Amino acid sequence: MTGGASPAGASPGGARADDADAHPAPQPAPAPVTAPADRESRRHISSGGPWEASVGYSRAVLVGDRCLVSGTTDAGPDGASAHPGDPGAQARAAFVIAERALAAAGLGLRDVVRTRLYVTDRAHVPGILAVHGELFGEIRPAATLVIVAGLIEPSLLVEVEVEAVRGEQVGGGA
Image 1 (cartoon, rainbow, N blue to C red):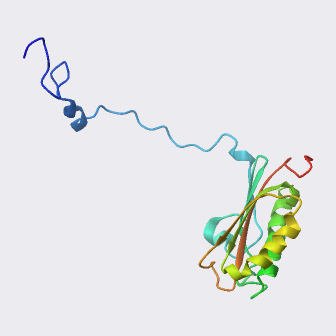
Image 2 (image 1 turned 45 degrees about the vertical axis):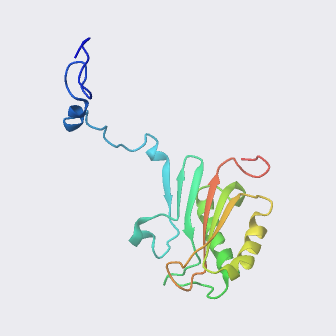
Image 3 (image 1 turned 135 degrees about the horizontal axis):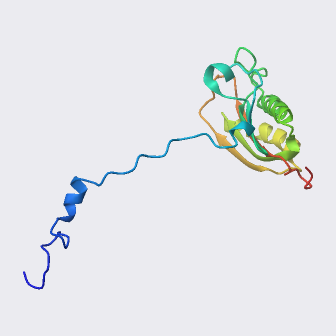
């Protein structure tokens, strides 16, 4: 070879490029995972629902000014619907439970910025949306409705999630 050229695939020092792949340089150990500094500001809110303790979740979690309410149904202590066969009544009852969780966090429906609805049958949508409209018609949060194959207990027809942010009330009030 002339002009000091290296063989194909070799670095100027003579080592082949694929040698580095076979023996990678040692990497520093990853940084340990730590809880956020504001972990103390995280507050768990329980509604005493039948699955909270056994499954390991909270009805709601308040972090700073944001409150996230878990999927909520009208399930009674036995896990079955308190309003079997009535999707509108189930939605209303679920929103009442979610509203209680918000109140425990010092927020209300007027602070809600997002709702999610999980519905087991497309035929139930009009009654459920009528309830949503009554509660949130003026508030107008971002909203999603998804048709699902089923919920954890067959008598449950709708599950709702709510997210609220303190100080984001309709009308700009805190």
